[in-house]
Amino acid sequence: MTRRAWRGAALVAVVSVAGLVGGCATTVGGTPKAERPDITKIAGLDITTGESGAKPGVPDATLPVENGDGGEMDRLALNALADVEAYWAEAMPANFGGKKFEPVKRLVSYDSTGDGVEICRTSTAGVANAFYCSLDDSIAWDRGELLPMLNDAFGPMSVVTVLAHETGHAVQYKLGAESGITQATATIIKEQQADCYAGNFFRWIAEGKSEHFRISTGPGLNQVLATMFFIRDAAGTSAEKQGAHGSAFDRVAAFQFGFSSNPARCARIDEAEIEERITQQTFSPDDQSKGQIAVAERKNLDLLESSLRDAYKQTGAAPPAFKEGAASCPDAQTTSPAAYCPSTNQVSLDLAELTKIGAVPKKGQKGGIGDFAAFAEIASRFTLSIQKATGYPLDGPAAGLRTACLTGAWAGTTTKSTSKLRLSAGDLDEAVAELLADKSLIAADVNGAVVPSGFARVEAFRDGFFDGGNGICTRKYS
Image: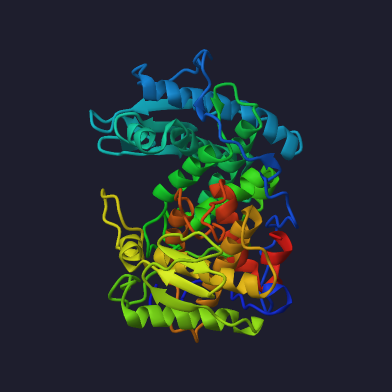
């Protein structure tokens, strides 16, 4: 976060007594907004915790591939592409007036650490990437560096994610005007559509229709969303830049739209929606700290507390007091790095742990996420006091999702020009990273019980950020 103005497209959420939220907000056209969903499900599917990855005992696909080595990464890629093609053979005619899906003409494997091959008028030497090329209707992937890295970091379904995305670009090319894509279409629109199409395919896998793969809607999808975080644009990248793919917050949203709906929804992603929804922004020229401030400094904690009080002042609830250090509580378990005690109406802070979370992340190193991740952990505990004052239960999955939504609503208020503590480039991506963490408090109840689905956590936070002013947090998560 930072003490400068928000310069991207975002919406304000203001809290009121009637239902915890009220005021002005805008709903993104076409975005699914289910009312009072079954909180044990995501997009109508049960939250499952079983195995994710390749189905055992299934023969490998026999798709023709150029320059392959027959190794594990090529087998994984070809199995993924065979299933993606099977999905689109069904989905394209079903959603686009009977139009037949034609598989891509070339599949090319290469090793970026070895001799380059010519693909799409470019040598692959040193190119750790996967891509679709419309010039010859081909999909290519780097088996030497990119795919092994993704597989090691996030598991085999991360490789499937990337190749489903690239097939999404092939779908755009084959649909043409029906996908609203031309040579002049901005890159960010193409990329958001492709992420959405990947979400369509993963819904198909989750429904048990894939020949080669299976995925749990709990931990399995969490890993897929973590992959989306990993392949996001760097903080400060302009959404208008040629080649921009999107922030993690925006890419995950597009994937979720696809998972929750059908390919026709993805084809509707256009310039108007992008202008309304995309949160990606550049750093301000006068931002010397790249949007990062010291979490444990008293002046910054005071700014946070003031920001939270302002966000919820219309509830009429007595705001909780902040206390540094651990505190015992007779009616709730102590959580880390922040805790809320209902009986004392107090939020206690473990500044050492908050500082670790809020540390500036360093490439190739585990550790910090960034200041907003730490501040959102504190904000989540603050929202519990508001829920208590307005009569909502503080334990259970509904409380966890309501907490994530209300934390997102607070984040929306920090986009206001009058706010002293404001969102900066990359802050919402930090929220995604923290929401996907196993012990994230942002979507946890008063006792620290975390909602098991990262998909549901991120969706609830996004609901609050965009539509908190419409009362969605209590209407949807009660």
